[in-house]
Length: 188
Ligand code: ZN
Image (cartoon, rainbow, N blue to C red):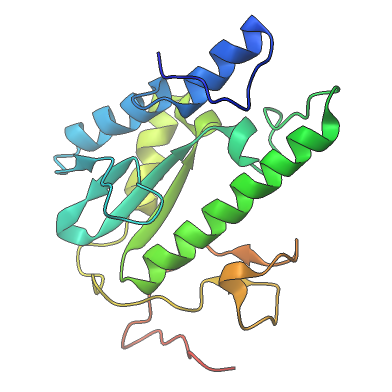
């Protein structure tokens, strides 16, 4: 089990939850890897040199995959995204920090020419559905790997969207990069 952070100091139940979430090689992560393996995709794990240390990286096609726990990373609208009833401020602050960090990591990966993909924990429960979803969401082999994907936020006019704190400003995941036929203008 992973080491529990000093900020935890909570009940045993929560300690084990925390460890599970902070740890690598979680069950959802392993499910995603197994499917990628079956698909014949080559991948590497936990690349420390990339923003946010993505859980799985497909180096050939520059795809960076995060397998996010719904609770910690606040999967919008998910029933796993609960909020503890005690120490509400503490948790809220923690959650906000996590979401902001995720946002920056996704933006930075996009700017660096990587294709960020978030798989939520709840999406990994049904392995067949997960496989179908992965097949659909992985960028096509011919996507311009290495091409920066700057316009990665929607619903916000803040130019500094990477650090924007507006709740309306959400990163657009799985956005296909601009191609010759379907061009996404960089300027408004
Ligand atoms: Zn979820």
